[in-house]
Length: 270
Image (tube, rainbow, N blue to C red; front, side, top):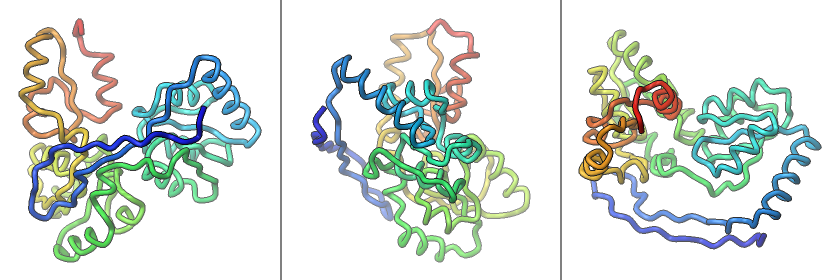
């Protein structure tokens, strides 16, 4: 397979909002799918290298199925970013291969500073991370010195270091509820949709960094309603990074792990 990957540029609509960090233009390098014999050879080579280098592979739910299969077939893990990092910390391997975006590799390194952390592509990034640069975020924090800084895991190591708390979508509600009970006011970053969901659920006093995931931000309630009409017996499972009007239509709202759990447990034909 050629080592030169084609680059695809994507333009998409995003409303202009005062104070927002622009991620209006996205790009991706997309490798061609290998033929079956080449795929098998690549997977076997990766298996051999992992064993020879005393390495373990962790893959995020969102990466290519081949990478998820390889992680599980070689004793690694497929999970969300925090569980990937925890698994790598606790595993005996001295090298972690992180199949995910850049902040996931940084998180793995934070939890395993003594280990070598490798990533297939350092240009694989997250719009939430890119949309919250440390200099602008530090200035935002300095403008609100009376607030406890809570940031989502989908941020750079530098932004995490500026925070008082780092949360995932699984634990954010519990932590913000506890901070509210202590009378603390919150500065939240970077995802305004997730922050708005937390604020609605907890009633906490929160100011939001104006960021969003470019994928979840594209979800539209009217499109979901049309899909629901086509599949009236289906349950709707939504991540709280989606806009509020999409979340309002959900039968279950949760992290990726929570969505998978709901899919397994909910009584629905589709």
